[in-house]
Amino acid sequence: MADMRSPLAKVRGLGSAKDGTMHFWHSRVTSVAAIPLTIFFLVLGFSLHGASYEEVRATFANPFVSVFALATLLMIIWHMKLGMQVIIEDYIFVERTKWVLLMLNSFFTGVLALLTLFALAKLAFGA
Image 1 (tube, one colour):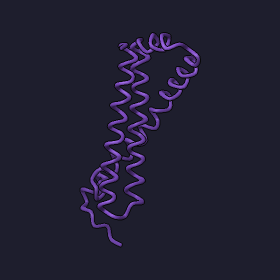
Image 2 (cartoon, one colour; image 1 turned 180 degrees about the horizontal axis):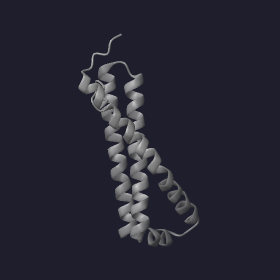
Image 3 (cartoon, helix red, strand yellow; image 1 turned 60 degrees about the vertical axis):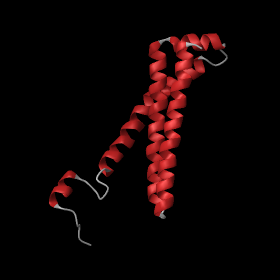
Image 4 (cartoon, rainbow, N blue to C red; image 1 turned 45 degrees about the vertical axis):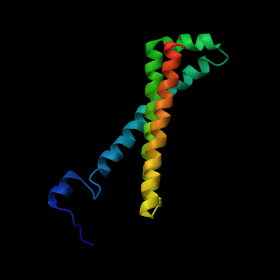
C-alpha cells in the first residue's frame, strides 16, 4: 500500500494525527523522569513510616521535599494519562465511546492532579 503522506510530512515524521511523535516522546520522557523521582518518593515514604503527623508536616514544610514530592506525583499522573490515552485510542473502536473515555481520562487525571496539589499544599503550609 502506498504512503499517502506528502514528502514534507514524511520528513517531519507526522502521522495522520499530527502529534504521534510528540506523544511518544512525552511518554518516554515522563517514564525516565519518574525513575529518580519515584526512588526519592519511596525513600521519603519509608523514612516517614511511623512518624507522627507533626513530623510529616515538618518534613513537607521543607520546600525541597514538597517540590520534589509534587513533581513526582504530577509526573506519574501525566504518564498515567498518556498511557491510558494510548490504550483507549488503540482498543476502543466506537468513536463516540472513544471520545467519552478520552474526556473522562482527562477529567480524572486533572482532578487527581488538583487533589494532589491541594493535599501537598495543606501539608506544606499547615491548616
